[in-house]
Image 1 (cartoon, rainbow, N blue to C red):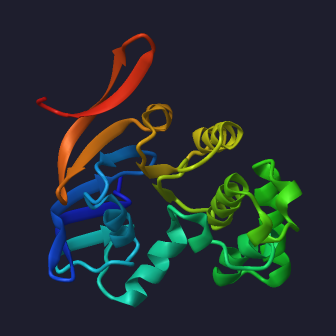
Image 2 (image 1 turned 180 degrees about the vertical axis):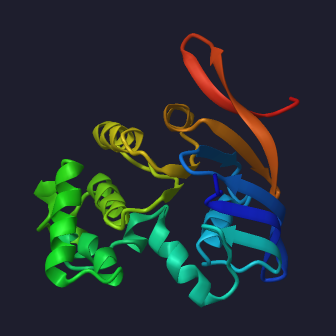
Amino acid sequence: MTPLFELDAVTVERAGRVVLDRVSLTLRPGERLALAGANGAGKTTLLRTLVGLERPKSGRLVAFGAERRAERDFREVRARAGLLFQDPDDQLFSPTVIEDVAFGPLNLGLSPKEAVARAEATLGRLGLSHLAHRITHHLSGGEKRLASLAAVLAMEPEALLLDEPTNALDGAHLARLTDILCGLDVAMVVVSHDYALLEALTDRAVLMKNGRLVPASLHRHAHAHDHVHIHEIGE
């Protein structure tokens, strides 16, 4: 089975600082990977590197069976791997939700009628049809997160790259988002400090420390109530 992504000793620098340090990673079809680590460890940079928003100084990046180097190489990658940004305001830019959700399909070459039909179908499948004609900047934070996820899913990606998808969600929107993500049949890389979400969604884990990846595993600890943690393997 051909991996969706393969990173081999990838190093990324920003302003002279090493952000990713010889990172190697493989994501296979259907696999769901938890990517944990402290703030500033390089997790977001890794997701951005996978879709070409950050460029390696060295190393090799293969996506969907082909090595990717130049901007033109990543156009196909962005059509096949959906990146959900940490802040939904960075993802939503059209006046209404339906326009935002239809934007990606339009870029894939669908006609305006086809793109709107796919957007409507995506919102309907997610139980979000009531948001279709809402003004995006009038949405609540939770509604913006769900709308931005719909915009990514309308592209029908083979992989999802999720950057803190539950950040600042209230209980109702957290439950709805978790339910949607658990029902998807696509590969995922999930960056989150929400270990309950990681336990529900993912089947293996890695830990990023100072720009490097180390093997890790999910563990449940029984306290007065349960807590799920990620530990570096060998701890």
